[in-house]
Amino acid sequence: MKRTALYPGTFDPITFGHMDVIRRAADLFDRVIVTIAVNPDKHTLFTLSERRKQIARAVQDIPRVEVAECGGLLVDFALKHNAVAIIRGVRAVSDFDYEFQMALTNRKLAETITTVFLMPHERYAYLNSSIVREVARLGGRVDCFVPDFVASALKKKFSGKKS
Ligand code: COA
Image (cartoon, rainbow, N blue to C red; front, side, top):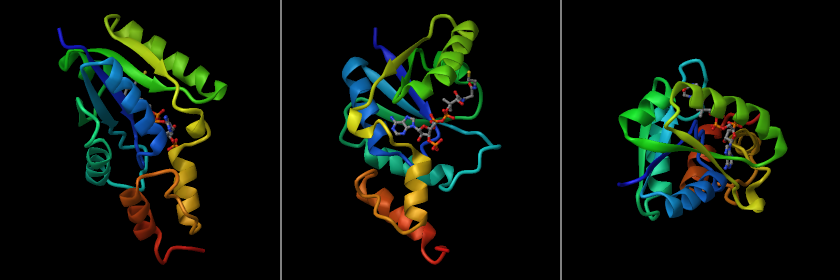
C-alpha cells in the first residue's frame, strides 16, 4: 500500500525551511502532497495561484511530491486522498502548544491519521515566512531564505512600496 502524507501550510511564501521538511517527508513516505490551506480570513501577500506555482517549481526535483490546495477541513482532505499522516515541521519549543492542539484535534476528528513532526535543519530553525516578507519589504536580501525565483517575486511585489 502506498503511504501518503500531507504537508499543510500557508506557504506565503515557501522557504528553504519548508523545502527541508518536504525532502525529509519524501524520504519517509511514498507520496507527499504539499497542501496549501486556503483560509479566506488570512490575508496573504501571494495569491493562491502564485503560491501554487512557486511550490511546484521549488519541489520539482524532489521525487514523489505533489501540490494541492484545501479549502475545508484538513482531515477531510486527508481521508479523501487516503493519507495516513499529516507532516508538521517543528522549529522551536514555541511551536509546541499550537502544534499539540492541532494534532490532538485532528486525531479526534480522524483517528486513522497520525501527525508526524519533523525537525528542519537547525540552520532554518528561526525561519518563518513573515520574517522573509519583512526583510524583503524593507529591501533586504532574502536569497539565503528562499529560492531565487521567490526572492525575485518578493522584490517585484515590494518594488516601489518601500517606506
Ligand atoms: N520553515 C520555515 N517556516 C516555517 C516552517 C519551516 N519548516 N514551518 C512553518 N513555518 C512558518 C510558516 O512560514 C508560517 O510563517 P508565518 O506565520 O510567519 O507566515 C508559520 O510558520 C506558520 O506555519 P503555517 O503552517 O503556514 O501556518 P499555520 O500554522 O497557520 O497552518 C494549518 C496551519 C494550515 C495547517 C491549519 O490551519 C489547518 O490545518 N487548516 C485547515 C483547516 C483545518 O482543518 N483546521 C483545523 C485544524 S485542527
